[in-house]
Amino acid sequence: MSDSAQWLGFTAAALTTSSFFPQALKTLRTNETAGISLRMYLLFTSGVSAWAVYGLWVQDWPVFWANVVTLLPAAAVLERKVRASLSSAGNRQRQGENR
Image (cartoon, rainbow, N blue to C red; front, top):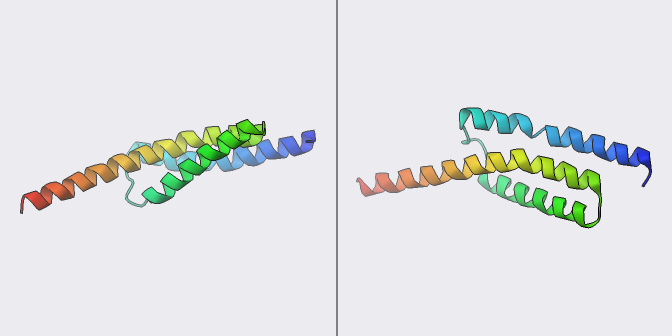
């Protein structure tokens, strides 16, 4: 692969990867996850993990590093969403028991 193609790959990876940090920071600051789809983040985080493994396997470093870095904010949002979903389910169950 040419150096130009490699740099284009790293640039594209940096742009798309950095797009996830604002949502992650907002979610971590506010703990607000109501507008976030749990299924989407489960699928997305699984896909990012698979892409990272693929990048490592074929030694495609832009793919590998972009997905490793993307995994950080994606996992943070997913963790908060799962925690909020479990808390919400527990609250609904307790409300049902109190009726």
